[in-house]
Image 1 (tube, one colour):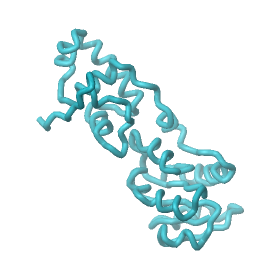
Image 2 (cartoon, one colour; image 1 turned 180 degrees about the vertical axis):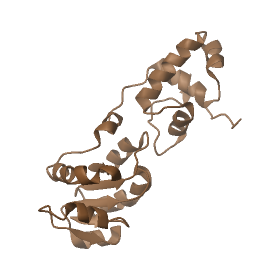
Image 3 (cartoon, helix red, strand yellow; image 1 turned 45 degrees about the vertical axis):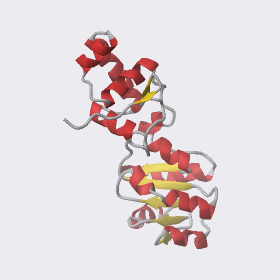
Length: 206
């Protein structure tokens, strides 16, 4: 088991009583020589910041060797991106003591393991065409009342659609939704940024 990252000492402490053979590696470059059964990649920020380009580098060196990421938080959209990059397991820092060893056992058995609270991000509910349309207008800077006038629906209907869309995206505000949609690394690829075939542009800050 290779443990990579500046916070590698913490997982070593957590796993000390396990049956796993542990080895701390200073960088991704040194993992190939260790030929581990699995890799624990430790960071101190969000999932995307921790993974960075290191997961791709690990994949090139180790092939299908399971990679588990330890991070401080998982932002909307990041989990699917990490899994698509080849991450096998994700553990939040605050859950290390109870979740790291079960996660490692799961990925070593060929499973994928993610925190239950973020599991919905793996395959979120699909946005309806109306939800995509309204989110596109939000990105353009329209407020709820303006969206209602443009789409000939009540403002309460707009709010209802946004509430449903926010839940599916795993966000809690317009700002978070816009940030997620515009982020090329975390965007969900749901066609939100086009209406009638014409690409949308974000509104300038007010």
